[in-house]
Amino acid sequence: MGSGGRATQTDNSGNKVVKRAPSSKPPFTLSDIKKAIPPHCFNRSLLRSSSYLFVDLFFSFFFYYVASTYIIHLPTPLSYVAWVVYWILQGSVQMGLWVIGHECGHQAFSDYTWLNDTIGYFLHTSLLAPYFSWKYSHRRHHSNTASLEHDESFVPKKKSSLNSFARLLNTPPGRLFRLVILCTVGWLLYVCFNVSGRKYEKFANHFDPKSPIYSDRERLQILVTDIGLVVVSFGLYKVALAQGLTWLVLVYFAPLVIVYGFLVVITWLHHTHASLPHYDSTEWNWLRGALSTIDRDYGVLNTVLHHITDTHVTHHMFSTIPHYNAMEATNAIKPMLGEYYQYDDTPIVKAMWREATECFFVEADAGDDNSKGVYWFNNKM
Image 1 (cartoon, rainbow, N blue to C red):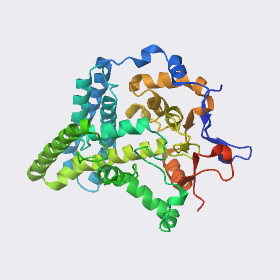
Image 2: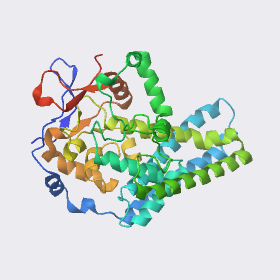
Image 3: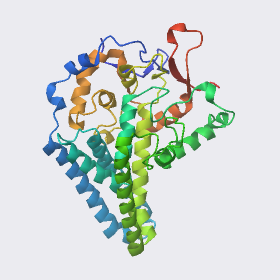
Image 4: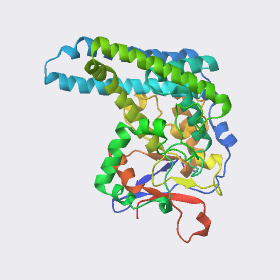
């Protein structure tokens, strides 16, 4: 096999065309893929993982010190530029911290479950993210990736389920509106109201211990998550009283918007591309679903975000591989995966608009009995 498939290619006329990923049963097993990865890639080093954590914490506190000591006193309009630079830098570093917390939830940080959950809990809670709640819903996403019935996040709608209002959202102004919502409050809409998530028979969110997302054995940890968020929220309230709400927004909440924007955009783009199939229950299986994701290139941010961006295919098959071994593992499996490995190096802003345009709903190919149960993105209403 080849070394992998580029989801977007150029034809002889110079036009960009999409080459679909294979949707048939793969000619290899998960065990075959695992054997292609050097064994040391599965080793989790507490020392090495901690070094990335400490570096991120150092830069986060450094940027906070600069903002609270110097930027806060700059005259306008210089302060306007300085604040935007601070938000981007701080938001990027804190997204890196969020990724480390995400690795803790997958037990990829160290060999110690209690330590992983403790570090992940404090990291995510400090960013007002529900650690255990998201850990369990995210685990179900990994267990049901690309399943139209059971996936937990960014579940595409079938064309048959769209109403007349959807036509408004499938226009240039509608796409811009969707992207603005996605980048600003998309994360909050998901965790609070399950927007774009799996449909349940009753209201679902990430804060109610009785939410249908969770099993009985998980409900106590959802409560622990809520307690942590209440404690942090109270602390932020006391900071606002002492420093002022404006100070808190500039120093804490504005970078948090960047973090949430990164989180939603990265996840959405990993699972949204015209080359990727989705499956109903007649065709879905775990390996086909895990392969229905795509690696993206975020430039220098690949390193800042600990390669959550460009090693996602590997992550969906072997989520306990730490990020510092994920690139080597990805390069090792590409020859075996061949066209089943999907990668797109389209600039991210351009990719966002393209995916918002081309990937509005999914439908099966009409008249093709061989593709029943396999659904592809489309936008032709």
